[in-house]
Amino acid sequence: VQLQASGGGLVQAGDSLTLSCAASGRSFSVYGMGWFRQVPGKEREFVAAISWDGSSTLFADSVKGRFTISRDRGKNTVYLQMKGLKPEDTAVYYCALDRRSYRGSPSSWETEYNYWGQGTQVTVSS
Image 1: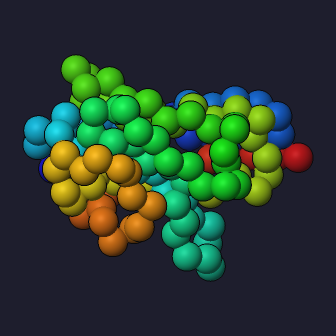
Image 2: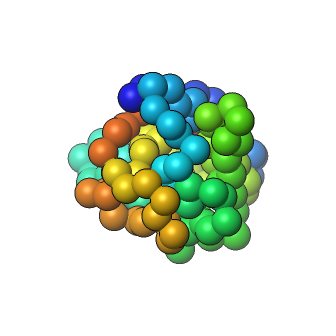
């Protein structure tokens, strides 16, 4: 399984950015996907997740109302649309594949994901 995250960059506070994560090597469509982020010196934290069929989503309180997660099962891609970006959103963003297929409710637990992308840097300047 390979996960390729892309779309990161340098933006100003208040701007929008959309991250993409393309999956290959597995029947992606039956697995939920998640986004996590990490700042140097801190633990990786949950950002958002989507169920295998896209019917259920979950967000960290810090991004609720600003971020949206979606997936295109035909393209094996999951997206993280970020609006109203803040300097505290600066981090390396990782996409991850749920270890369990057909999970009804997406998980925020890092241990429930067993494949990870390489990360994409998002930097928000004030």
